[in-house]
Image (tube, rainbow, N blue to C red; front, top):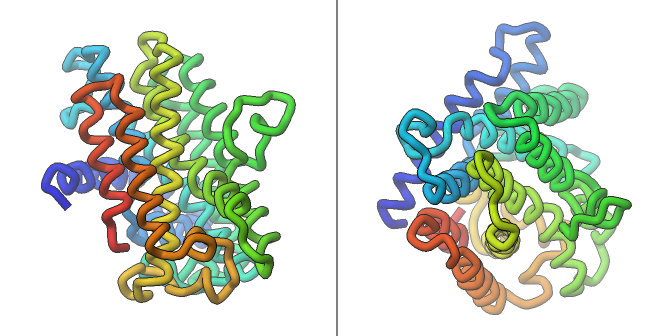
Length: 324
């Protein structure tokens, strides 16, 4: 990992954790059990990739709009974007809490620590996930941005975490089905022979949708003072879709090649559960090639942003080079 990426990741984690600390109820706030459970899973570690991608997308777009110093944070991000990043991390954490439950993946290790239902019981874990999702939308509604920007971000986020409404529903946005829709595909495909079409549908929705949304929402926040050209927003969405799919392909590879200690979660779980994964269809070597090709395409998508896109491109390469 080069020093530029390390600096981005370190700064992003610091900004995100500070926002989460401020936004989440303390462990001493009643009812204690659920707030302890929320904090247990939120602060269990994690790379904070979604908020970091969000903040860097905002910075990339804002750099082209020449934000004056008083409207940008010391790190160069638009003021308040860390709260948006924190909301996205809440949504990601909520999905992990629920995904680990006995009725779904039935896992007892997450980010190197006991999963929420192991530490606090199944009922509190379900409610902690619900509470994080609710707090995420509350946080977005209170962002430092004009109402039209907030509505646009809420539309992106709600579509990305949903079942496909906005994709296959009456309001067709052309987006992939959302995270929950992808989780349903994943559950219903267990035990079936994985196909290329099924695996791509699961990955683009279950994981890719929230990663894409994080990047697009950050870009919308970074550009709220002017109307971003439709072509540039489309380029940002393409980047997110390519990077999100590459991220999950690498996750599939790591699940088959790394230990539980290295991953911070139970290794080999996908194979043991007959999950539809990219390597199950294409093999590990082809999967590595596909991930690298997707990142190259993602790089190309950001060409309209010139040098301002360098940090986001560096992060995309980190997604496929990581070992955990």
